[in-house]
Length: 113
Image 1 (spheres, one colour):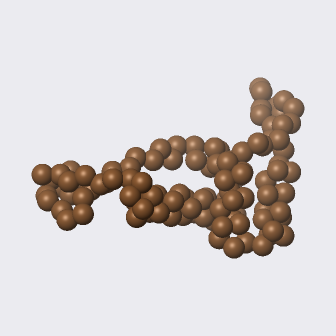
Image 2 (cartoon, rainbow, N blue to C red; image 1 turned 120 degrees about the vertical axis):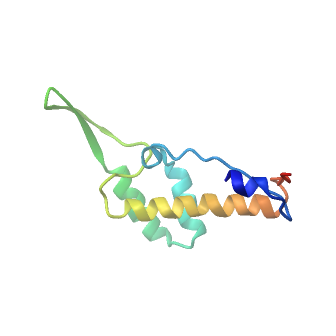
């Protein structure tokens, strides 16, 4: 990145840092539903996918024994074959939003050098 900023460019530079730590655990279900709708998924498919997430019960182990169950309120399930695909759709929505903001001058590039 330093090399790219060290030379002059036409149109400017833009750096955005996105912290994706624990992204599977923190993905908002409202955002996911909106992204699925924006990409043209039918309401039936969206309902099926969201029902799968909302019906999940989790438990923690204390001294090797399950200690009660609770329901997820956000995030996607690690180990579920659909989770990587849902995550890719969510990040594609973020990418398109950032590009839209850049193209409409909501984000302003800077010139280095």
